[in-house]
Length: 141
Length: 260
Image (cartoon, rainbow over all chains, first blue to last red; front, top):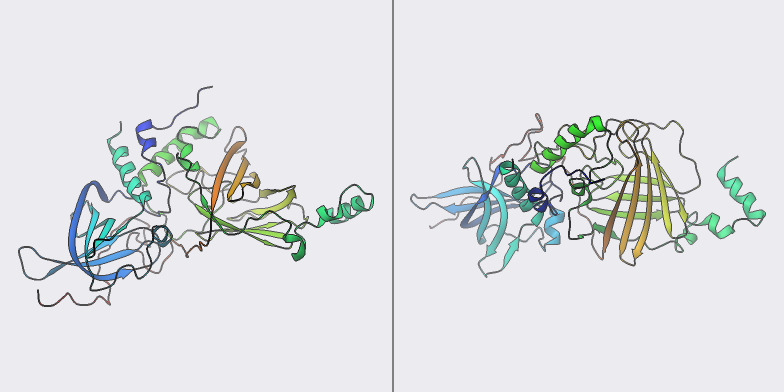
């Protein structure tokens, strides 16, 4: 008997390794909207269930700074990618790439961090693929 | 008469080697068991993880439950909602409700303990005790095991009948009562572990559900505590369990840089 397929192959293809630990939806992030900001690390929250990066970004048109809060993955997932609790230090100048929040606030899901010396730290693939799966699910019939 | 006495009788009659009867029952005998030590991570087989393979090959669910199951999987794809502060749970195979991507197996006399990075603890008694006839229902169920050569056979009953299948998402159907799970755990090679699971769930399935997962040993890896039950969660409202993105700055945030 031919097996029943519950979803189209387009969605299935995007789901590889999307099962990494995630206790929430990625629907709040716009998977098609990459943003890049440069700023100074305000705080690196190394905790459960997801790591958070706080960044001061110099305002372009006004004086002062805007604060960004960017979520990342679980500690276990990041450790596999070489992260530690001291990977980012307050005062460090970095460039952050992230999937932007759909509501336009200064937040999003981390894609990668580029340090001043050119080295990078990447987020894990699972949530990124989850975002992609969300996008495909929204556009599939 | 207990199984241990039966085994002893069989040994005296020359039917079973004494060593086989004692395997894993003493600290000394543990060293003769297969090396399951260390943490094991779900193998990337170039395809979807076991849970997502159900998209192309659904389990043999009862026909009337298929729509609910289908809806749950669609919700899983879109990751609708949030899973805040729920205990890890075993529902017969590796999934996202507690039997997660990374596991370890610990040997002590008369017991194998399977733990996961999300804190699931399955105590598998290998001391010859039988499965309880009328077990209490728990998140892990009640498990007994025995060795057949180099294969650990684990039988589990007493899973929560309300536990959702394939995992705790949206409106996934419950596994129902009288669920029995049999797992065959063995090394496929020195650093590859395989779990062949057979799940019989009469309220949920029209036939036995079989699934195989493989794990790769991660030398030197120690899983960090992983919980979705923190004191404060920026992405899930603990009161409503609904999604949010809380950008309230931490109280101890330093001031912005000066001189710019």
